[in-house]
Image (cartoon, rainbow, N blue to C red; front, top):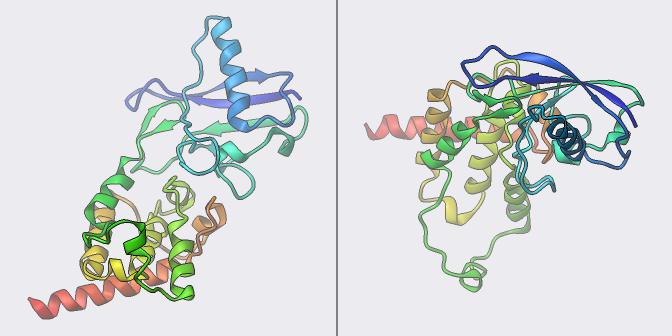
Length: 250
């Protein structure tokens, strides 16, 4: 298969970026989008040209590092990460536009690579538990209802790729933060920091420059882990309760 690529090239965050036209020829239809970029880069290197910088790790839709916008959709067409997009999803000869996430809180490092450490800092603010649960056998002695376990597991599926913030017109990270808060709030091990967690993570999110949720549901539409926007409602409830508790204590 042959494609015409419009790929964003930018030397660093201070440089002026631009779209470059690159031909991708003789690409196997079963190649993933990242494998296609590998092929294109190999040919660019052979021609002594600068390859396209992009991130990848597991290439199994788990790590979330292959974050890019394909034809205007964060992580590309379908409901998976960019590494799970296959070239058979496109038409022969199609022009494909590839660019980095456009959220202000994800500054561009180079080409398609963005700095998503803002999510790491939000997690560091409160997305953890301090309760020592021991090894797996010890943890398994804590009985959890199936509904709670399933609810927590659904939220824990978030891979932190950043597609939600990239898709949102407000660059909101509330689907990501909501997933993390919902996951730990549903488990007994997450109760000691429950109120503090919601306050710290939301305040960290605001400090990083992410916007507020306006119910566009674009985040839910592009999430490769199929996280429901209902976690945002849970986040709002947890935050309001935490604020009221803080106000009473002060």
